[in-house]
Image (cartoon, rainbow, N blue to C red; front, side, top):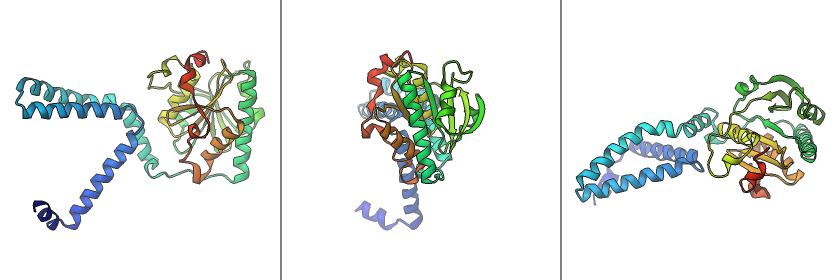
Length: 283
């Protein structure tokens, strides 16, 4: 009866308020999905449940301890969730929540880019020459471009191979690709901040690939110097790519509007690289 009375007293602005709150929580859950924030929030939820039980049972001492513990947790949350908060604000800033995408190049240009990068990765893999190629999407990579040497050359396997040859002065670091241009080489990338199980034993190249993919929406193609494996990093996930056609498909999806937010290489035959983390540690 009380519920019916409450509903009858609702006006349009109350309905709008409820919808906006629901949408807010939907966005929050979308942003933290697949991150360590989920486990931390679950832990906070357990503490709240225990706190409620102690309050109902009038266990004053433990209730007092839990109450002030939650105050400390509230202060620590911005520090603990710093990577997730930065990622969330970045997504909001570039409209990532609504799956907005960059303006695609024409089909011929996209095919050429995918072919050149795939061919380069294949040759480097056979020669076991390490490399990192970062494909910029919507999040600007200017701050990382500025750490390297400006190139601004058209994408070609000859250019990329000349950069990554061991005796080249630009081989140490990452190449950053914007559209159909190699904009910079020998760029420094942030190492992954999530050094959980498996990742701590990875080599610097793979941790750097994960690091940039955690902070931005780019796609990273990385070649291991130790094993020759070709991997891709996106959204903080590293996947080994064993087939050239699959790599072309993944690269193409970055430039193609209808597939730009559906890039899931692990569902198309990729293999989780964490199982081979020890093998990659020297890369």
